[in-house]
Length: 279
Image (cartoon, rainbow, N blue to C red; front, side):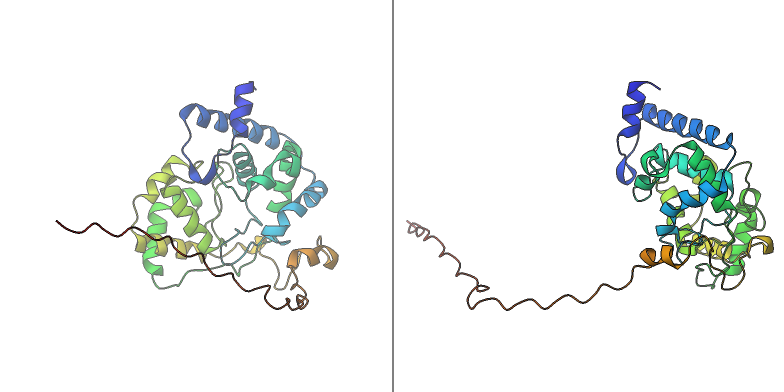
């Protein structure tokens, strides 16, 4: 890799800023090279479990994210999809300021750690209790899904691992709404061109209907977690710091001496000269 390529890779591209064609080519090439390298490695699930400690703070120990869509459900997602997104984010081929620091090699590790954590996440069972939409336009959503989405994302929302197309069954509705908007507005810069074209073809009602329908596609039984399942790789002593217990009450502050908190009077305004008399 040339020094200029390294420099462009290291420069942050914040909040969806547009990339020049040369920089975009570099970020794509860097991400693709790491993707190829990671997929060629044999994953180590035990090392993936250790690597996932960093991810679990946001994506939760089970990999289920949050129903409000702040974090997606990544459990059960295709290994190829996870590797691609990690490689894209840290190469800046996908702009994600929140995820970017956690994806850096000094935090996450190299291609081997990407291979390991992707394999670990892919085998985690999924929750069926994902965030869903209002459920008021599902007939329209189903029609649109079959017509526009099923050929790529699968009739059951299972995705396509070979083509690195993510599964959408079990994904949180608010998350897919946010990603849909990001793709349409050009902020999701690693989006497939076909997906970009699709997003421009829907009005707001159709977008909500189709993504609500997708959020209700059932998780395949072989991928579904048992009711009440908790990831045994994260016992209570590891969960405690991630559950953010309430802060202890603040101690009472001592009273300030009289006059300390009183504001001094404002300075008097300067006297402006009177206007000259009219002739």
